[in-house]
Amino acid sequence: MPIQRNLEAGGNFYVNRWLTGLYNQRSPLFVPLSAMGLQLIQRMDALWSGLNMEISSVNTLIRRPAFTRFCSAQFGSSDYPLNYYSFQNTSGTIYPMVDTPTKLYQFSTSAITSVYTKGTTARSSMQRVGDWLYVCDGTNLKKWNGTTVENWGIQPPVSAPSLSFGSGALSPTSGYTYVYCYVNSTTGHVSQASPLSANTGALTSQNITVSYAASSELKWTRFGYLEPMMVADCITS
Amino acid sequence: MDKIWIFRTDDGGGLYYFLAQVNNATSTYTDSTVDSGLNDDIVAPLNPLNAPPPTGANLVCFWSGRLWVAVKNILYFAMGPDCTTGVGEEAFIASNQFKLPLNVTGFGSHMYGRYIDLQSAKKDAQVASLTQTVEQDKQSVASLASQAAQEQSTYQATLTAMQAQNAQLAQTIAQESAALSKVQAVDKTLPLPQLGQRMETLVPDAKGGVTATATGLALNDAASRGVVSQLEEVPVLKDQLSQETQTAANNADMLTKAQTTNTACQSEVAGLNKSLTDQQAHEAAVVAADKVKIKKAWRSGFKWGAITTAVGGIAIKLFTAGAL
Image 1: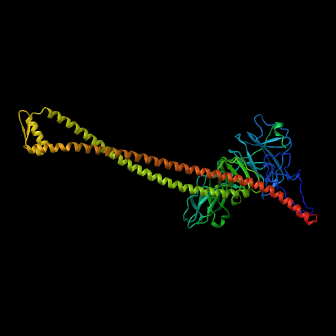
Image 2: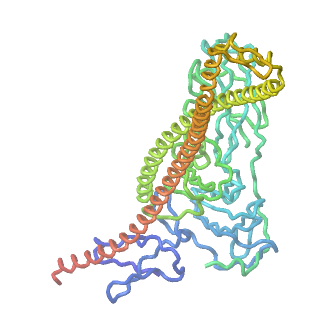
Image 3: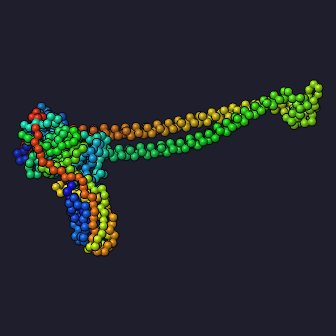
């Protein structure tokens, strides 16, 4: 444990949280030491190459949730860990994650659950924002909230809406122009707008029928399934 | 995607307000909404807003309220708080990017990363300034090269015309030499009366003064002097011809040397270009080395600053408490 050097009982002069800063190539088992004359001073806990810390939404450093010490489940024969990550959502649930050449997994002390199949053996990079975990690996761009996998970003419509007219209630004097966007109602994200439609021009007592192309991009839905995991591969500190 | 949002302008307006939400399975929507029925709290994200994350993104981190991703040496940042419709972490703009000199291989948390970024920005400004100078120099060199190429082109055209003229002259000389040999061969066997006439043709001053005899041609006084006078001109003309030939050879030599000089100029221009490029690379390397030095200096300064602050604080407290 790092020493909290409270230099005054009243706490006016107090070495704040993580001012030790970044130490590369350090042992994860010991906090950094500094020499002051003949004394060795144990520094505050340091950033461990960013692996033990993360930045909060208000730009402060906070400790990243740790991992379960042991997992009894096994990987499949072609899987092995490429990367670990853990995050805590706004409800307080902690999700330990492990990335392998074939899948991204969530794991616990006794189970490993596939989040999605990657389709590339490249290492995934993960980052939590709010309740969502954003993952990319050079091929996949996904986000996951512990239940649902969604594409990260939406491909926008490529064609402008076309217009036709029928008898109705609208009488613009200059005219209307339309665009449309694809929306993922689960994430609330809205794609970039389509190209602009033609202007209707002045109309008298007309309704306007807008024709558009539906998105072929499907919403992802993930229902986890359990897979065996090699014990030795899953031990984490 | 499961929904489609349709946006429309007001009558004659330029902003696209939310009109309706429909299921993604549909393909038409009939609009009968008057302007006051549009939801002007939601505005359509027109191009370039809300683009998807860049293809090939393989690193991600969160900093300063935005998601950052890297594709090789390009660092992209999401719209974040700038996104008014949709999710800021999913919305990107192609121009929200920094191009770095090397591929990005990882992100690290750092409390004073912003400070280092500012130092980097200063160095980047220096590089930009140097780059501009080098670019101007390059333009000057390019202008010189263009001028030299134009001169070379003019010279080449003149040279080609003169070479053609020289070839024509050489041909004429050869024809005249052949004609001379032919006439001389005829003269050798010409009967004396015709030989006399030939002499009078060649030497106008001998006209009427040449008479054929049984042993040869007899010339009166005027004809004799005319022939001798004309013969006097022959060695002088030969000498002049020799000197003209030498002058022509000198001219040809000068032309060759001019061409060599022109080629050397072009090589010099190429060398200058390479020198400028090397200088640019050198300056960029120096700036990169400076950045590394700044980082190292900051880390060292931070370490000793923290120690000094701690020691100073202890000393002040002890002094205040009367221990010192």
